[in-house]
Image (cartoon, rainbow, N blue to C red; front, side):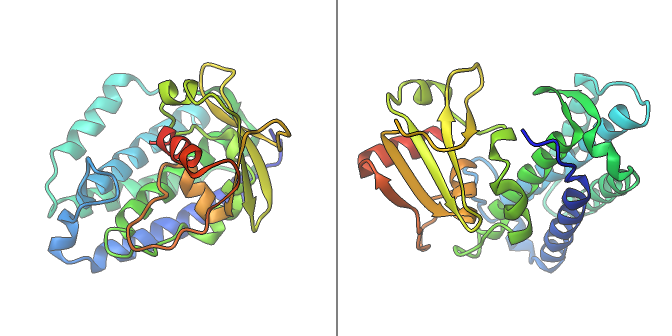
Length: 263
């Protein structure tokens, strides 16, 4: 995993994406807040609830990691989730704006070299860079869940893809472990623009992508980086869109099995 400090780029791209989402929400009509999002369990306002509560908890974690605040307890997170869960579609925007603004201010206040500081989170001790890139991963995925409700051709922002595509080995994948363990064959993911290769690594407790190709892979998938990032986020199939993902090695049945493990 790279020791490069990408914290300044993460901060800039996160702000761009929050600005984009906020502008979209300000223009959204009341019916849009109760559109079905890409996530089958959530309407649009519930996705915004998730982004808003994640922003507030994200600020709390930054304060604990960098400003001497106490570690974020489960009870504190439950209180935040409870508040956002209590909001209705027509009251969600105000609290989302407050939480996202507080989060961005807290992140912006940190010096650039904070990105290399080792902090303790759910992935163990990692550089702050890794956890903040995970925040960007979450934001772009869930913002896309909102956009695609009305635009089947919605894409992740190019600036976020540029950061994520060459660092997918650091991300926590939405993998169904039982299906992954039953897969029975190796998978290589080839990204283009930017070019990068990963293989699915099931050797540890938490399935993840390992950087680099695998000559023994039985299945090789290739797609533009934006599309492949969404694929491993569990956000590939969209009715009405035109996927460019290609099976370079293997069968369509094997592709279906690989797609099924990313939920």
